[in-house]
Amino acid sequence: QPKSTNIKYHEGISREDKWKHTGHKGITLWMTGMSGSGKSTISVALENALVSNQPKSYFVYRLDGDNLRFGLNRDLGFAPADRKENVRRVAEVAKLFAEAGAIVICGLISPYKADREFAREVHVNASLPFMEVYAEASIEALTKRDPKGLWKKALAGEIKGFTGLDAPYEAPENAEVHVKTETTPVPEAVNMILAKLDEVGINLPRTFRPVSTEPEGSCESK
Ligand SMILES: Nc1ncnc2c1ncn2[C@@H]1O[C@H](COP(=O)(O)OS(=O)(=O)O)[C@@H](OP(=O)(O)O)[C@H]1O
Ligand SMILES: Nc1ncnc2c1ncn2[C@@H]1O[C@H](COP(=O)(O)OP(=O)(O)O)[C@@H](O)[C@H]1O
Image 1 (cartoon, helix red, strand yellow):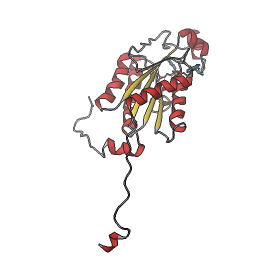
Image 2: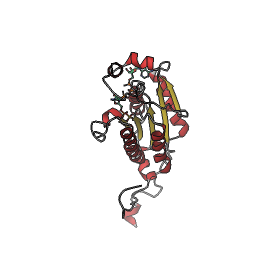
Image 3: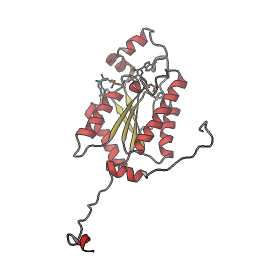
Image 4: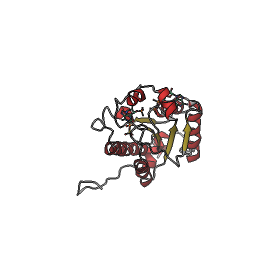
């Protein structure tokens, strides 16, 4: 519930009218998984596939957990309440972008099921499509990959409350897409997500606008 009272929601132009510009519906793809599981790698590859590999570019916007912590979420840490607020804010921002017609790719660890469910509800309540994508890899693989050296630091006790070590990760049970990134190459993961997008059906049907059948210059003669 909002803290403010005496506020009123104002409607603008319809979502359908906004989506006419993009030629497709907005949707939020929520990538979850532990650090190093492949959220960013797959998100960027998917973004490229949608922007550069299609006959017509899609309107895509990535909301990356790490990146947002430099700005919008700079006041948040990694305590459970902070992670919850992190997910809430990103879910609300994603909803706004999806309303504007974007394919929003969120990449957040989002370790708690309840928080991810909240993100889904925000979209469902606004009648916006939402799908969860689970990037999974074993702790063994994650500690080997360790692109940022964070697992090494956390294992050495230099990071407290690290997801997968001394902070929980509640794995999704019903994610729309489940990518086992130890055995699924990145392009295959992208194609799995594209196939799911096709299933949801975000492309808007197009019909041709007929040409005028009035004789040329008939306007002036009236
Ligand atoms: N304690 C702890 N636990 C997990 N991750 C940590 C931690 N401290 C810093 N980092 C870095 O922060 C990135 C995760 O931020 P998120 O906003 O995605 O996290 S969360 O959804 O709020 O749980 C995460 O990014 P990714 O590696 O891309 O997942 C890490 O780079
Ligand atoms: N199949 C795969 N899918 C995604 N990432 C992979 C895969 N195989 C290896 N990797 C590597 O794993 C690391 C994943 O890191 P990153 O995408 O930053 O994860 P996250 O955003 O979840 O923290 C990268 O170094 C990437 O090259």
